[in-house]
Image 1: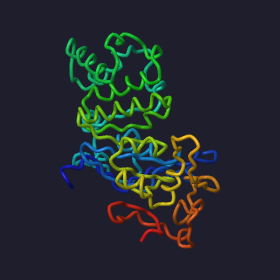
Image 2: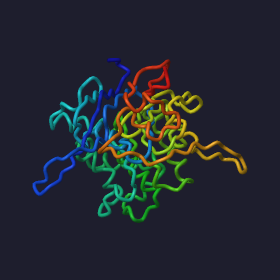
Image 3: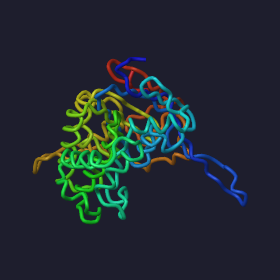
Image 4: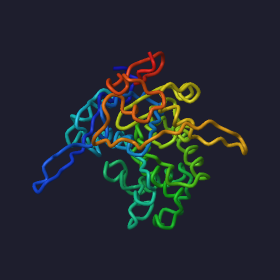
Length: 322
């Protein structure tokens, strides 16, 4: 395993049981994540995109062991996270943090902002007293907030300011990996770019590594070095960001790109419209999971599941690509 590789995920799976009957016995399972593999180098940003319910946020939760994986391996700095005991897991969580999607629900309304940011330091015994207070002030300045706001409560801040507080809290323990779970999806468009620019600046200054999860490619393309596209629990394409945006190969990736608005009044763009609904992850279709909606579907797509394999400089799971 390369020394430059910070995180390696192999055949990651998460099945949620479906229970029924009077005794609540398992009658099936929701295959939220089903055989996902990828790697992230130190200092890199890997974007993960897909529709709601495709398993991208679950993947982030599994990496941090906020959810336990059904199968698979998660290697962080050469050690398998899935094998960690309580003490090792505590140490790991100092080096791997998360920025949550909802800046309103992710902050404790009963705690002052300064205490929210200081809490991770206290839990990991990183600083005490005046030193901790100075670190909190430094973090607040780092994310664009005045230290004078440390005694205020979350309800006194806007959505963008709250997300800055969440970012400061994640950085309080000096992590190496930060999972950004749709950190701008709940914010106004005008604020989204400010938060994205802040994340880029923090990565450059602190040498952070990001797993950046989002719904659309229009957000991910501005921050990611490489982009992975997920559909119904599977990774369907993984490539260099610029290459994936300019030369998409998988039909689903092409569909996502066609949905990006053109920032020019009167400009026309060919939109790919998919027919039908997303299949249930509790009963995914046989063969390629996208074949029921794919405009380029072939007979083999309904029978054989395509292998996620390397083609040139990218990885792709599609029978169309040889």
